[in-house]
Image (tube, rainbow, N blue to C red):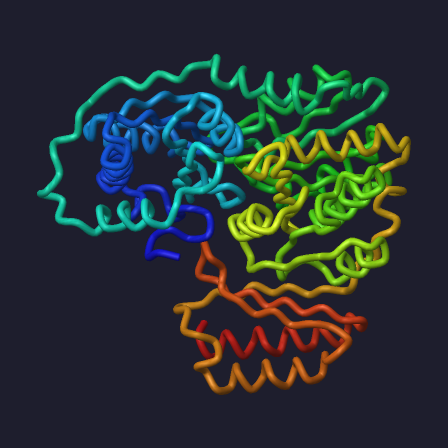
Length: 447
């Protein structure tokens, strides 16, 4: 991981370094320059953003930098992160740029760059951009002003891909769905997609103002969706995050269905059809022990990676697999797309419901979750945790207490100044006490 690029691109407060206008221009310039050096020609770049009020000026700044370095830029306007990844691939573009901070509040924003394959940008290119961010600004040419117009046809092409290819022969007639768009990038696309496939829809949180993205809604705050599913007597609820690369669901009883449960449902369905490559599922160290146990009972191996969809994808591509993902609802079907896509995940889950003729609650019934406590602690710095004796000793003590009955995971967030404490075990009261005591220690030592 570089100095500015975290596990999911560059993130921060919009308008503040490194997401101030001059620095963003240099990022666009450096990206286009690096691509031009590799390709020996002007690079083709596709760009899109979510609904944050800072999206327009950030998109324009990236484009100015890229134009100045000789690049060509096409804008898809407001579109999901996986939508940009898809367009980058099918348009034979050399890079796709997304202006989004995903599930973060509206004040934040971010820059993610995709390669033509749909994978995130390689480390070498990221380092080149980071050198540019830190370079002497006097070494840059005057930025070239050039109008950037969004092309509505690009978004329509992505919608047609979801509807006609991923949703082929999927008939949702008779199915009642509540769709929570998080006032984000899916606010137009998701209702059009599921209505076109025949579902009866109730749509909530699809009125973006630039400041209400993820605000008490979407996959981070599914409580209103849970109530709406019950009020509408719906078959399922779909909750996207701000850039719609994640999905959480709500079953017909109003119960939340997370990424672990969706991995279980889709993996079990694929395994029953003999289509689960390698009889393996890739998840991260954050996935619940219940997933591991449920899959093992069905002859399926769970492979764990470090946190981050990039790590999940790398493992899928290196050693094979039909599905991988995170508890947060970021699921990857590499045979369909190398980018996690909340709407593809929804289509695949709805297909399982349609083909099995089971309710969502019946499908997740084979999954028993182990109690899991997660506490986020804001930190002033991120020193190696084993370099702080009291923390190292506390970790050793808790791991001894959990031996054979649970697990502890303590790590720093890749995108925020947070330490995350996660403990799983059979007894919820015990693990809550352990997690709270460790969180308090972290506050005292590095908070």
